[in-house]
Length: 157
Image (cartoon, rainbow, N blue to C red):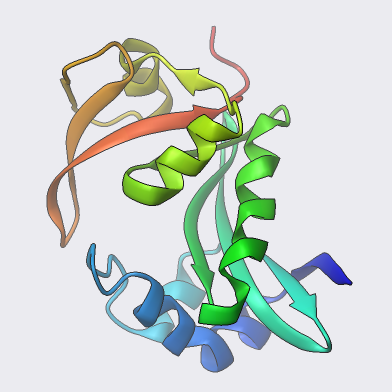
């Protein structure tokens, strides 16, 4: 049986930096060291199974709700990471995704936000992509990436 709960950055970051690095090795690391994660004032959640944390996520508090900026798992916790993606169906939870996580979100019928609205939510310059949901934007330290905004951001007026 697994359980999800909020956890402090001080508890997460030193112990799970390796999980973050491993999870983001293919797409690149936005954060260059553990101190950046602590200083970014994120809201952390963990999923534990058999007294071991196997998945973590971090959210930034924004005017539109909680924006997930990290979703990392241990190899044995990949299926548990889906529980975090399911949260994007709740009001006020959202995330920019691409690749496999985006495909999982589509398969789970998580709402996609049209790119024109996504531009207002993320408040960053974008280039609208090949369909109404995809866009490209520059991510600090990673260059240009194609993304889709999933979830239910609030205060869109």
